[in-house]
Amino acid sequence: MAETFAYVGNADSNDISVFKIAENGEMTPVQTAAFAGVEKPGASTPLAITPDHRVLIAGVRSQPFQAVSFAIDQKTGQLSHIGNGPLADSMANIAIDRGGKVLFSASYGGNKVALNPLAANGVVGEPKQVIPTGLNAHAFLPSPDNRFVFATNLGSDQVLRFAFDASAGTLTPSDQPAVKTPEKSGPRHFVFHPDGRFVYLIHELNGDVAAYGYEAKSGAWSEIQRTTTLPEGFTGKDSGQKPWAADIHITPDGRFLYASERTTNTLTAYKVDGTNGKLTTVGSVPTEKQPRGFNIDPTGRYLAAVGELSDGMTVYAIDQATGALSKLKSYTTGKKPNWVEFLALK
Image (cartoon, rainbow, N blue to C red; front, side, top):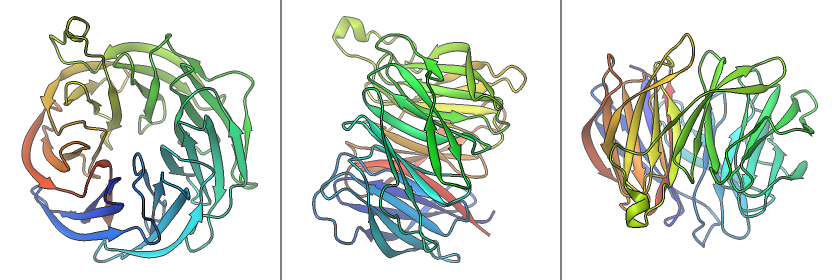
């Protein structure tokens, strides 16, 4: 197993907890990397790693809005601060294009998306494009072939499509949304299947997970199936509790999909049919309190989930036959953790 590290973004302590993960899933803390020049906590701390694995970028959601870039030591996984660059607003989500040239970001409160160029050293430059969207832009991610970028609008129940010119580093909005979701469903995060033929979208407000066929040439999404993140027996309507789904990730081999739900503090596992993209629910497990973020290690054997209200991370083993999760161990992180990135260094 390559040297593999987990990076946890902590919103209230304005830092990143760095852990090394062993072959057996055991985590060892190796570093706490503070954000230089940042004083106030923000709502969350989105993270992104460049495709060459050399730079980690963290989005700061307190004034002044900025992106903090760290160099990743290729042997130890430790972070060293390179520099900060400006963001157009408080950004709930950041992502880097497949070529490593630009940073995409989405503002929930500002109802906009933006594109910033990345300097050769990984520091973020001034915003080159700032584009208004519908209500509550939440995720803004490139397609597998880097030709399109998609933005969820949680408050407008739609996913917007932008054509991306990688050589010019520019976005062109489409006249029509890629997909319109059910009213008050709240599309939030999405993930592409590794083979690029399917995309999976989690809806914050009704707890749905939807599977779509993805047509790479046009960037069109076509709904295949709709299921739920809510554990069996959820009676939120009776108790006044509402669904509050958060994050979604797929194993590197595309066989299993996972989703987090914050009202019930659970993770739900699904088996993915590689032929038609459909999901079969495997089951749910309890997890950290308010699991806004989680991720899967590059081997597809472990899942790490963090809890905003528990200031902790729990690691699970993924059953390679069924996709079921079994808890291994919990660890202390910084304050209000909300994002996990894994990285295997050669």
